[in-house]
Length: 410
Image (cartoon, rainbow, N blue to C red; front, side):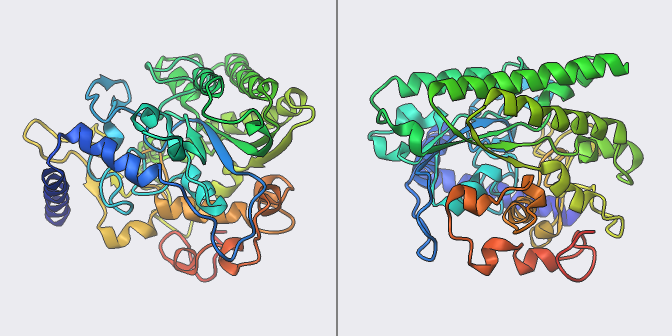
């Protein structure tokens, strides 16, 4: 614990030093960092073909949010501070300071963008850009904590789509933007968490009704985008929510709660059919988070598969929480061990975890993690490079969550 506290103290000092050197307020420094770091145009890797798409528009929650929560909003809601993801130690792996992501580094949308050579800018920064070049790769509208329904004041997916519609009514993009743009739509279960938090009934009929209402709203969201002119969609399935550390803490991180995972299964099964009906001529690929995450969380040879690198849940707190004296109310793994953890905090994977998951999505035939379709082929990106088609060797063989030799978690 002493070494962990010392590490946190040093990280805080480093963050303060950076802010001082910028000679601006904390919030202004954050905006500058984001504009320079996350809105600069990306380049397609030289050994990749040019992708089919030149823009990504992102709708969803914390699994794809790259900085849309207000870093200056210290208000507390039922799930923690609004600016929780702007606190130390978030971002310690990449870029080295908190950058608005619920991870130690990159999240799913970053990995997709990197693979395509695109870097969509967070919507929150749209008014800070002096030219349109900062949004030439698209815009990320996702907001951590959001769902398809109202949840704690975070921008729900339908309102994110409304924001996109308003942007497209300006002269920021051409009239043909729909043809070469792809929609990334991903939610991780905040609507179900809100239902549980509000003491919703555990009766199977009530649960079934809830799932159908959520999935129907997802299909309505997608249909709205379809009616706007978009035809290409990357859609994330729900992960095994019963395996998140915030859930497994109740049994000392020993096993997943299958009742919760059954909800995810019901959600995903209904999702496919309703999406097919909503997007009759859509070009759709699913990212099967439930199956991909399961490669890690059901590897019983790894005793830490359900634990988080950064967690305050045992103390009634969250990763990044401090007391009035500024002392950490969470435990933190050492920086050299971060890549050995799949879970970063109580709900979200590490950058290494996301890296592993994304490489599963890139795997070849029979494309089991993308429901029978090739993601590289869908995106039009040359996937001939070895590192594009399988997990990085360092990640794949790293214990404890690789669970042995090779790159299989099974």
